[in-house]
Length: 299
Image (cartoon, one colour):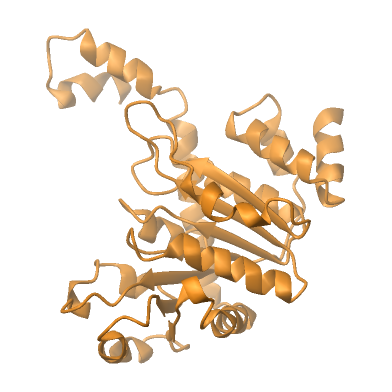
């Protein structure tokens, strides 16, 4: 690892926010030497909190309220907000920056918005590496918020130590219609906008649906009611997250988590030479639109 990377590592460990922000950009853009830098990162015990759920559930408002509670407790937090990219220009709609603007000058808070960059799931392609860089900065909490589209809910379970699934009680909406997979990945369910009609019925039905799952896990899946816009239920939620993180992670789950990360990193490495813009150009210049024939040259 060269002297530049050594310097930035020391600066990050000393709490230099500018170095942290710059390093994330360097890793994101695969600057020369970044792999050696990642290989030399020290071990960290900081746990990752994943916040996911469907669009419109109030995830960003909830994260904003969680930041407020963490700051009130005089703790530090690093936040990664993954925003959707347009598949046409790969730009991001960085809406989370607006919602959380009050925290940008707070020394206990670091917020970074990341575009999905056309990733089919809802996470940034370098999300594992970026969270590992954040862990080096010695934050008390690290929060990753997904866009809540595609496979982001399932992907976050492979990244986060504690997965918080945010849902809202829609009038007449049955819990049974909830997206497949959410039940399996949630460590904590948050029923946000709990001042809506039928919220209590929704919570009751959700708890009944989760009841069979209690028999297959050592730990009960908590259901917390919040009204994030009014900061209600936020302290209870943070307490539950901390309680969950303090539980000894079963060895099997721990290694599944690591296997998921390793699989993602290997996949990314093997796809490195394939450029999406070049694929578009090649497809534009071909007369054969059979994708199976087109991809044969990459196998």
